[in-house]
Length: 368
Image 1 (cartoon, rainbow, N blue to C red):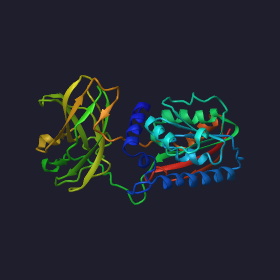
Image 2: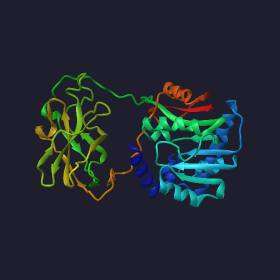
Image 3: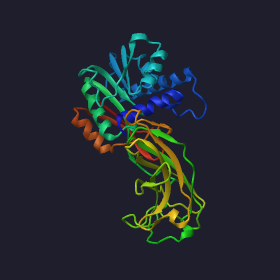
Image 4: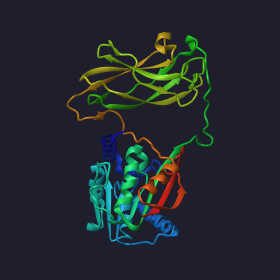
């Protein structure tokens, strides 16, 4: 996911419900403004206590809130620092942050859609803080920003940031991956694929689509197959003309999250690329047993959705898909090496559950 894709997604989420986009931990009850910003006060109080416990003196000059969103933590930091700069990639977030800001010029909000922090000079901040932000960008970007944290913090200043480490299978959620070298009978190749709303996009745009599929056959579907993937069951797609003519039969593939029993339903993420030529297309979804046959050849029903490739749309733009916040991590050993390479001195590493189940995650507290 490029920075422009990330920016587009966050702008879309800010339009829908900015409070929920920033903080999803409130369940289904809408956030009220007072409660929302109080969580920031509580969080920053605990954060600064942890920084001091790591042996880093608390300076009160200038702080940076990277990935500030609505300014929940920017405002909280302003209770402890003379000036706080909030940085975000989404102008829709920053517009609301400025309107909600009670601290006047002490809180400044900046749009930054670059892969660096060039809008700030070297050694300007006493404290740099980032949480639940780096986890939504590819490592090629998060690595660069971590390096920038240590450039913009002053010598002796503190840097504290959160980022996931590696994906893991949560306790109690282990799934089966049974190797298989069997050709399933035709009555094992039956799928019910739920419909997907129409999509409008720019030529060549990346489409991340989540497709719900139920196994309505008499056989379990193996997610693994042979070592080379042969005999595994996967979701695939074809591109057809608006009148049904096959244009591209073998396109993207997506693996099952685990073996799928008869009657079981799974949701599968399929990443594909829209055609470059403008026009209206039929995007067809089908399941396939790799190196054997498509389910449709065995009598299973496919599912089609309309895709309008519109040259008037900006590069990468997609309408009709909900904004997707993917999760990315960097292994702990690599982050520690990156901090040292950037001139940082690591003071503490604490585990956290910020990404939710399925990931390790850490707070890194360092100084320069």
